Image 1 (cartoon, rainbow, N blue to C red):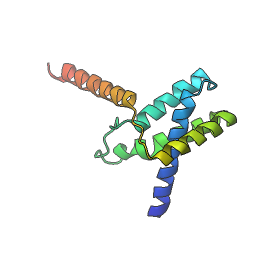
Image 2: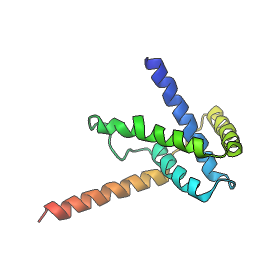
Image 3: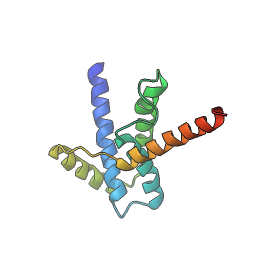
Amino acid sequence: MFMRLRRWARLIKRDVLTLWFACRDPRTPWWFKLMAFSIVAYALSPIDLIPDFIPIIGLLDDAIIVPLGVIILLRLLPREIRISSAERAEVQRARGQKIVSWAGFGLTVIIWLAVVIYLVKRYAM
């Protein structure tokens, strides 16, 4: 069972890279780029919006939200763009270079700062 989960996680990582390359393809519709960028930026971000040490909810984003978003977006992606993006993702994986989304990191930090500022203003009075 552990091997199946590991394989599934590897496939999701490959599909996230496919979406990343699809976002950079000029043939991709703007609305798709917007949706895919949000999922890809979050999936490739070095930190999570919901930390993994929070029981159940912390793993929810990694186990359900990101894979579900990736699956839906891959089905919406036009076939020719999906094929060319998947080929580019495979080349990237073969090189062994890791892609990190600093936009996702920045967005996550901004959301956490907004939550902290809200809580301080609300309860510090």
